[in-house]
Structures are given as structure tokens and as C-alpha cells.
Length: 269
Figure 1 (cartoon, one colour):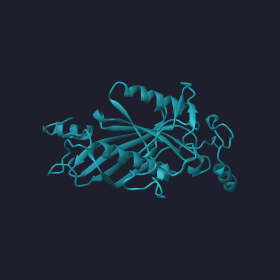
Figure 2 (cartoon, rainbow, N blue to C red):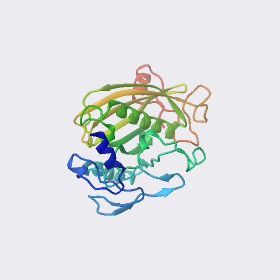
Figure 3 (cartoon, rainbow, N blue to C red):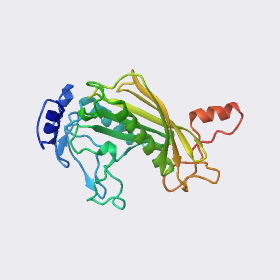
Figure 4 (spheres, rainbow, N blue to C red):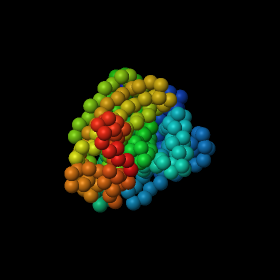
């Protein structure tokens, strides 16, 4: 079975069953193709720049709900609180030349719809990031469902992105995940991740994965990342304003509540 699927995935421009209809192999397009979003009807081009293609924009494999959520969060960016984060398949050209085979794990396929399809939106004032995610057929674990390891990998990546954008370079220290419901392949889920507190150079985050309207919980958990020696962190490890992100001396909701009960300050930024 898999040999047949892989042969189909490797054929450029092959067409197959409509992935938006809820099954089958997505229509394959090469990077840089013009695509038309169903709701807007407008052509979008997969832009390329110094770091290459931005994978965090709609393509022909996205289902209707994925496009709807993307456009909903994109509309919020006009209000100034939310910002869409670009998503590349490698680190900067200073670290990885165009000839290098290195790729970020969640962006290691150029076949649209085959694996990780996602976009990220950051709310800096709330220290929160949202990822909309559509898993492809190469992420199968149990028949027709997404492998739990793929979900953890993306949660780890999105959580790290949230902490890195706000506070500078980080490395994952711990991930603790509880699976509640399986995620069907080809469905659309929402990943919500937020910073709870900062303790010296360690940043603690919480996360959850729900269906598109938030009525069903698929996954929940926590994550801890450790910051490098960086201007974002003060002498005592507190988060402070730096050129790498908008973070100030800040505590998350849980830490602010504990500080309030103890009669201490509740700093925000």
C-alpha cells in the first residue's frame, strides 16, 4: 500500500482525489505555483526571498476549514494585536547554504498536503501563539489518524517559536503531553500555546490542541524551554526588553495570580 502512495507522491503535478473532500492524496503542486484560495478566489504566489519559500501560507492542499481559519486570523492582524509568522524549511542562509540537505523536520517535504501543513499567528501582548494544523497522509500512526509523535513534534516547534520570538534563542528542556482524542488525517486542528511564567532562564508554557471550533480537546500539556545567555534575560534570569523580541519584565496568568495572592507585584508588559 505504502509503495503505491509514495510513487504517487513523487510524481510532480499528479492529480488525485480531492483532499478537501476528506480523503485521498492531495493534488501535488511544485513550490512557487500560483494557487487560488476557495474563499477569496484570489491568486496567491508562494513567495521566495533570502531564506526561500514561506510555507506558512495557503496552498491548493488546504481544506476549506484551514483556509477559513487562516483568513480569520489574518484579518485580526490588521488590528495590530496579532502577527502572522513566516515559516521556512531551514535556518538562515548564513547557517545553511542553498545546497545543504538540512531541513527543519516539520518542513521536510515540498509535496503540498503530504505531511505538516500549518500556519502560526503570534499575539505578543498576550504572550500567546496559535497554530492551525492540517496533518497529511505521511503522518499516519493508527489507521487514518495522526501519529502522536508528529503532534508532539509540531507542538514543540510552535512552542519554541513562541518563546524564541518573544525572548530570544531557546532550547527545549521538557515536554509533557496528554492525548485525549486522536486527530484524523486531513482534519484541521488549532494549537494554542502561551507562556505561563519565567523562572531564571527557564520559560514554562502550556498548550492545547482542539478541533477548529474549540469544542473538542485532542491534546493538552506543558513545555519548558531554556534561554541562552542573551540580552533578553537579566542578571537574575528575569525577562526584559531586548532587540530580539517585545518582552518586558513579565509573568503569565498563573504566576500573576500566585503573586497577587501573596501580595507581591504583578508586572506586565
